[in-house]
Amino acid sequence: MSYTQLIYHIIIRTKYSKKTIPNENAEELYKYITGFVKNKKSIMLQINGTPNHIHMLVSLHPTLSLSNFVKELKNSTNYWIKQQEEFKDFESWGTKYAAFTTNINDKKRLIDYIQNQRTHHGKTSFEEEYINLIKEAQIEIDTNYFLKDKD
Image (cartoon, rainbow, N blue to C red):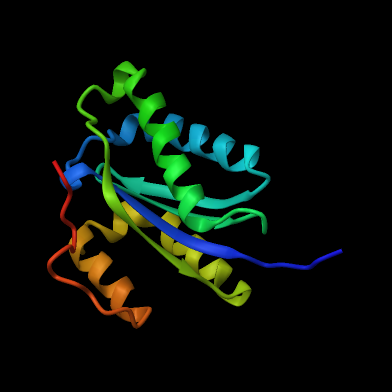
């Protein structure tokens, strides 16, 4: 038996960061995403967000590639959302995403952070948060592509 602990903090945003995920309907989307994760033999540790982005803490099954997982997640949820009347303003997801590996010892801190997204964003914009997380991960930001979507 192989032993793995592949925990990712994944952030996806709506196209152009538009506020198209109403807070009052977000739980239905989170349930759908959690089911998607479970069907991929993975574990949703925490999910939450605001009207323009979602944070997930996911333990991915070792047979999955992160990029394929996120691509399939976006495609599946995009299709599902467009079938739901409650998300009538949703166009699609942004073209890019952020994903950071994390240590099991940071799990509780990240769960708390994700649970408190709406409170957090009362003080900090999504753009500020995104920049801080990327810099914290010591990733260089390419301003030619940062938070830009294709038409």
